[in-house]
Each structure stands twice: as C-alpha cells, then as structure tokens.
Image (cartoon, rainbow, N blue to C red; front, side):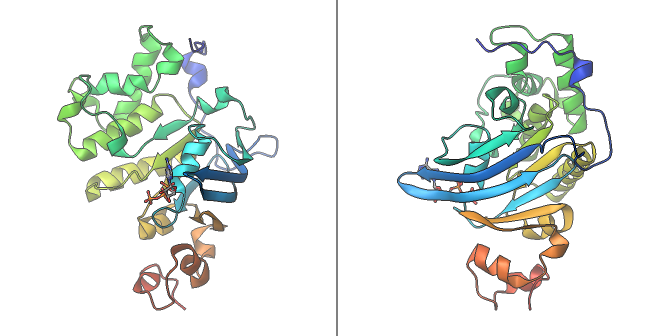
Length: 273
Ligand SMILES: Nc1ncnc2c1ncn2[C@@H]1O[C@H](COP(=O)(O)OP(=O)(O)OP(=O)(O)O)[C@@H](O)[C@H]1O
C-alpha cells in the first residue's frame, strides 16, 4: 500500500513568493543526459534541461520529436537508457509522486461512472491512501482546484457528460488538487475553443507566478512564443533552450522542424531572416 502523506492542508499549500530559484534550493526539475529507446529506436538522446520554480516552459517540436516521451520519463512511466532525472533535487519516487500531471485528454477513461468532484479527487489518491475515504482537507483541495478552473458549479455532474473543454479543465483541476510544485501539461490546448484556451493559459501563467514550475508541450507555436517564459526546442535531443526573445534566428526552428528557410511558418513566428 502507498504510504499516506500526513502533511496538513496548510503545509501542502505553497507560499506565494517572487518567481525565480533561490541560490540554496534545487531546480524543480533537472534532466541530465536522458536517453530513451523504444521499440528498438533511439527516441531521446542526451536530453538536458532544467526547470526552476517561477518558469513556464514550452517544450516544442514536431510529431514524434519525443515530447510526450520526455514527460513520461520524468514521471517514471518509462525506463530511461541513460541519464538522470531529479525532481526538487531528488531522484526518489516520493518526489515524483508530487508532480501534477495533465495527460492528453484522450488518455483519461471518460466512461468511468464518477462525478467531476470524484475525478478531481483521484488526483489525491496517493495522499488519501488506496481504499481510504477522503477527509475534509481532501474535499477542500478538490473544491479549491475546481474553483481555479471555474468548474465548481459542475462538481456533481458525471464526467462522461462534459464537453471537451470542460474535460480539459477537470484534468487540470485533478492535477492541481495535489498542490504540486511541478506541473507537467501534455498538449493542454488541443481541440479547445479560444475562451477555454485563454482561461487555462492565464491559469498556467498565474501558477508559475505562484512559484510553481510549469512545463507544457504544445503545437501552438505562436501561443508558446507569446506566453511562455522559456522555450525548449526538441527533436530527439534539445536543439535550443532560451527565452522566446532570444530565439529570433530561424536556424534552430528550421533544424527542429526540419523545414526550409522559405517555409511561411517562420514569418508567422517572426523569425524569418
Ligand atoms: N511505446 C512505444 N513503442 C515504440 N515507439 C514508441 C512508443 N511510444 C512512442 N514511440 C515513438 O517514440 C517517438 C516519440 O514519440 P512521442 O509520443 O514522445 O512524440 P511527441 O513529440 O510527443 O509527438 P506528437 O507531437 O505527435 O505527440 C515516436 O517516433 C513514436 O513513434
């Protein structure tokens, strides 16, 4: 059985401090020399990056670049061939169990006969303990998380009845119910209308300003350039890692997406030569 975390809800809640890593504290996430082989192919090779609290990082690359694989490796869901992953300075399972993870929407079993609130509560299952009942602090955390995604009014609704945008918001609340210091988002905007994208984007930015570290994979390049504080361009390995303002030259984008200098997307991104 998973150990129950006895911390009170007060101690779980983060204090809001200014963004940026203090000299004495480890990075929220440190990926060093990560290599992953899947199906006999080298999917990731020597991937290196760090993510500090206060940062909102976009992990960007073409289909099959290894974005989801990177997230799955950080979560410990797949075995890496080389390298080391540290969460809050630790390689242990305990640190990983406090990562907030928002999977791609289709990965969740939406036909489960449970309500929105119960779905959010599944995000705290390790803390509650398997086969134990949630306590007042768990209900408080779930309510707070639902409130942050503006879904409190649908708490009693069966999840199977929700729209795509509402489902995405529930998945975000499920991750937030754990009060994570590190939040991993796998393509959170796919198929969402603009108001829902705006709501979530604003929330992710707020979370990073609340001293959380936020990592998002996305195919919305323009959105990432405008909204993320840092971008990692990946194609099997990290090709560039910098704030968007420092990625004004087309070469790194061309290498990452394997496109020519004449590709109009470069003009859309404002990086054409
Ligand atoms: N279980 C698996 N077995 C074999 N190969 C896999 C497996 N999972 C992923 N791959 C391969 O690993 C590579 C990286 O996949 P990954 O899903 O990480 O890419 P991605 O950057 O997230 O792509 P997308 O933008 O299409 O979601 C792909 O070539 C994919 O086919």
